[in-house]
Length: 76
Length: 193
Image 1: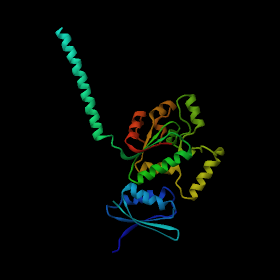
Image 2: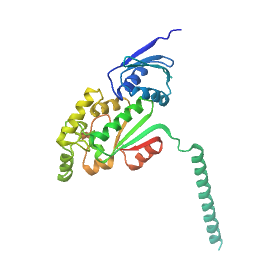
Image 3: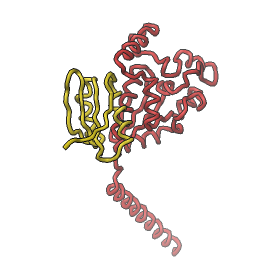
Image 4: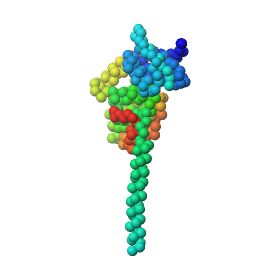
């Protein structure tokens, strides 16, 4: 099963940039929509899971490759 | 005699009634509680760059996390809300002099330490730019766009002679201490920065 995800590119942004960019992107989506967040901010490693807990959105996956952090998020 | 008796009864009734009302109110409060919302209230008391900055980072992050956010700008914190083009505020020479010593607007905010006549803030701004950390000027706009409630303190405005037209657009109505306390009481997080 493949998931279609909207990519949110927050590479190069630093705290609180990636979360604000993600929040804005999520506003355009509906419940259940999946978003792929790309970030280079190392703080996002702890901040994206915390944000998910706070906001009630689901973090499906987190990975890291070549200095880019990738997160899959399902909108609540 | 009869009247006196009736009055005695009346006051007993009144006491009972007061007790009854108090009990009912206490019960209601216990039942409904003062339900804390998924909300953060920050009292922005200090106007220094290195204090307003984290206040705005926390505010925008909280808003991005779906929390309600109120920031109450009081005393020196209020000056962060002054319009950038406003060089001076105040109603008489003392408040005017204070506003010259403590220039308003986020872009003129000083560091609480290592200010070095503006070198500190300039260097910090430069580093932040390189690291793509948004400057407080930008964060303030971001916060406003995200629905963060930016609330000026009425008492500070009166005391310092700051008028509503001196402040940036898109702010909430100025409030007093009791309303600020109410904001804090219904919040699950309260900070004084």
